[in-house]
Amino acid sequence: MSPADSASSGQSQTQTVSGLHEQGVRRVVALLSAARVAKGDAIWSDAWTATDTENSPSSAPPKWLLPASGSGQAAPTLYNAAYWDADWRTTLQSQLSVLSGEGYDGVCLSDCDDFSTSTDPKAASDMASLIVVLANAARAHNKQFIVLVSDAELLPESLGGKQRRDYLSAIDGIVAHDVFYENQGSAAAESQTSSPTLLALSLYRQAKKAIMVTQTTSTPDKVQSFVDSARKNGFLPGEPVPGGSQ
Image (tube, rainbow, N blue to C red; front, side, top):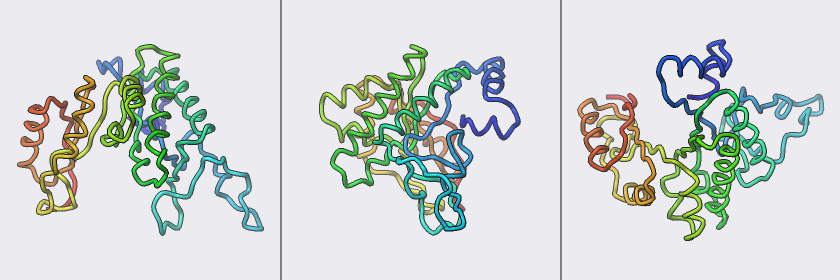
């Protein structure tokens, strides 16, 4: 769950997590972006983007804050973060400490595919290094803390031998999206994805990591096909997400 969910309900995150545990939920995992920050996040300051009478930022933003994600937005709410920056790593480590203290059993790091859009040859290495640092920091507070990654299907094959082993050793599993069908906004556009995604996930399977898959679909008859395909490949199928138009 996203920590923002509990804030919108008026409950503290500690109350929300405790309530889920009381309802029988064994593991409550928080969603935390490895490469994005949104307005409204606990670490966000409006002063970073507010301007004074001379149209200058009223407070200098941190060096890790990059331009807004996406283009053409009059009032952007989502910004990129320099995942290779040491201060950004420290910021995320502090966030993990807070989440652990609030009772979360783990974290799912999202936006781990940001390295794939970079021309920096060290991009994949930097992302993997960040994930390993965060996993080690989280388990310094709680040895049983779960660390999952999302959007990271292609990361292991982009790493050298030792760093790949270190990365796979640091995480507990991956959440992969739209593995079997590529959703392009309509039922007619849904088609089976090519094998590279499954081949990439095989590196996680060889490392005996949990692989959870989700599927966005606007075609009801593909739901059972998705579940069957997931189980056939030894994956844990998540609840299909409605999407697109029919």
